[in-house]
Amino acid sequence: IRRAVTVGEGLAVLIARPGPLEDSPVFERGAAGAEANVAGVLSQLGVPTAWLSRVGDDGFGRYLVRELSARGVDTSAVSVDSLRPTGVYVKERGSGSGRSGDLAAGTSRMLYYRTGSAASALSPADLAEASGLLDAAGLIHCTGITTALSPSATDLTEALLTLRRPGRLISFDLNYRAALWNRPADTVADTLARHIRGSDIAFLGADEADAVFGTSEPDALRALFPQPRHLVVKNDKHSVTGFLGAERVEVPALSLEVTESIGAGDAFAGGYLAALLQGRPHEQLLRFGHLCAAAALTGAGDVAELPPVRTLENLAAVAASEWA
Ligand code: KDG
Image 1 (cartoon, helix red, strand yellow):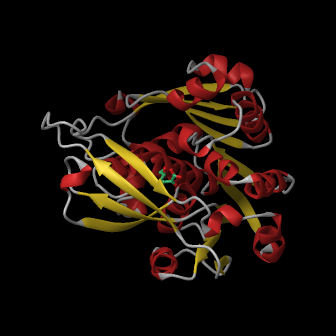
Image 2 (spheres, rainbow, N blue to C red; image 1 turned 60 degrees about the horizontal axis):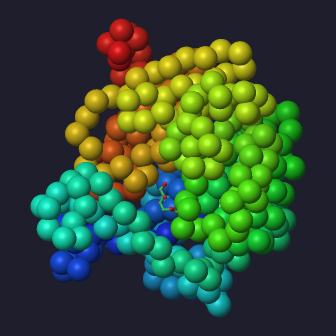
């Protein structure tokens, strides 16, 4: 099986008790960051995976490296930045009490504490240092979060696209996070469109695509982005439309009780990409994505523990009619 490398910021997440943030006396610590989440899923599904990043010389940075290593991820390309801290985000969770400041149950909000973080200093120099790992990679995954971190991180994502070649797939998740972009709107759309067009596999959340490109309609998005062989549009919580070359399939999501949805997109991408590297057919890629997303949706953390690959295989093989 081909090796994977994911590139981007890891964050310590502090998960609040459901209810208004000001009432949460304790926070549960977790490991987060979209590309780190994807690395963990790939590795848990048996894909040899490295995570390339920068962390601060602090307890959160050491925790992230330890946690990713525990998930089987190669962390040798994580640099420690002695000048800048590890980024943090707080996950505020609704309890639906109707009290002022409380969000609806099952919904959440991200509060970032990451300006000037170690990973915001990511630059093409980090790629040069990890050239051995990147040369051996059959898949490189990055997201629009990294692009948004800083000008040097944008340069890094642009440089990643130049590593695309036969035998090495570039995967890109739009992951539009409005709070991270302080550039004019058209620059944002241009930059993100260039990254999608330069990839082999692109994941677009329909709501994010709507915010950036003005449409959430899968066929309109395919018309806009005919190039990535794999274009995956996550419509809403009910279905995903997958384009592979000229093929178009729509696979419904599992209906389940959502505990908390942040991280589900990363789990989806991890499941899809692992199944792709394992040579599975198109529809199964989407089903692996849904099954991994389900694991994230039913826990409060960014990524929940996944069932064994064998179980996922059996579930993904359940007749298409059962999924509808
Ligand atoms: O996809 C989940 C991520 O949004 C979360 O882990 C935090 O990486 C993060 C970000 O930048 O939003």
